[in-house]
Length: 437
Ligand code: XUL
Ligand code: CO
Image 1: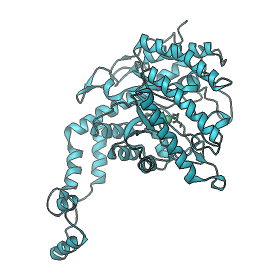
Image 2: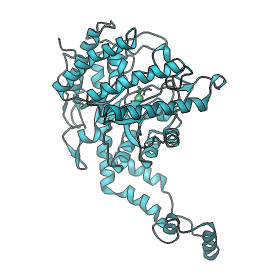
Image 3: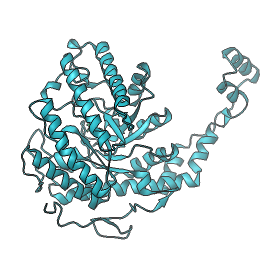
Image 4: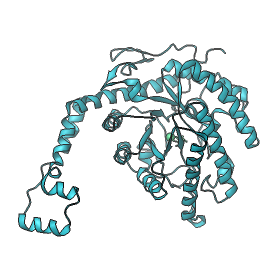
């Protein structure tokens, strides 16, 4: 096949002084930071759906992107060719991973049998290309939201046949993910929610969603798939209200249905802001509860109320994300998947490189800044000291469960007034972050 990105050579690290737009200024894959290489820390992944399927059409106009390797048809041969273009891109960019939905890589057929056959034909090429390049599958997933059959939801559909269809589709997607050595599998319930409560039995739908995931856990064991399962929270879009609305809602759901040992979270920055949280809030909540698994790295737009899926360039976001990740000891099976698309006006193939280089450099800088903050220990020491009253005396006794309300009353009555705490030093700490950046 003719090169898809003929004008672009393998992207090199040239350091912060470089003026070459097609070079890394900060991401140096083999450079060791805080005991691991940058590649090991960051585990970058390209999202197949945005990089190779999304033509950037919107409600007001058609697709704009040029994809010269794509003949515009829904044929299996075109899908196979697209895979070769994608792997040329992954290789030239120097990422270790990619992610896909079943229907991103292969066309949906007239029946499930035909869709499965199409998928097998494309997976064969995916496997060849993985073996040729060493690029791995970070996670696979099934598209349970695009086909009209899923208009009422998939696992939460009012129609039991649709549930069964979705289960069959997920079973196949899991088999394929296993075959490709995928390190994880994501459940994002785009239509697992509702438009109006007037036609919705919420309790029953939640039970069905849990049943669906329990069936997936069983099937995972049955086929011997060892990858990590993730749920990806998002509050809305395309539904008005999605059940997996944020990390806390997912955690409550997983606990209620006894699924917490089987699924971690895949936190997406833009989904966090749609839920009225910050990216870092969602990461910290998940990490604090031991369920932070992977990240969909992107950015929203404060002025727009939908999922704009822009490439991450905000150094505060990447720094805070890397602080949380370093604190929890880094990824195991997860990684940083660029669930992001180029702007509609960035329509040339080379823009895919600019977009990903920017995201990778932003996270590499975030990693270096976070590692420096962690090494100096100023922030961690401040937080430790702030909670110092819990390390001994009454605090330690309360934490250990030795005291009740009665003993607290006796203690305070005896002690009298308490001294004010020391300052939270909000501005001083914000200034400190800026010094590192
Ligand atoms: C949609 C979204 C999905 C998931 C995978 O907002 O983030 O692409 O990441 O289904
Ligand atoms: Co996502």
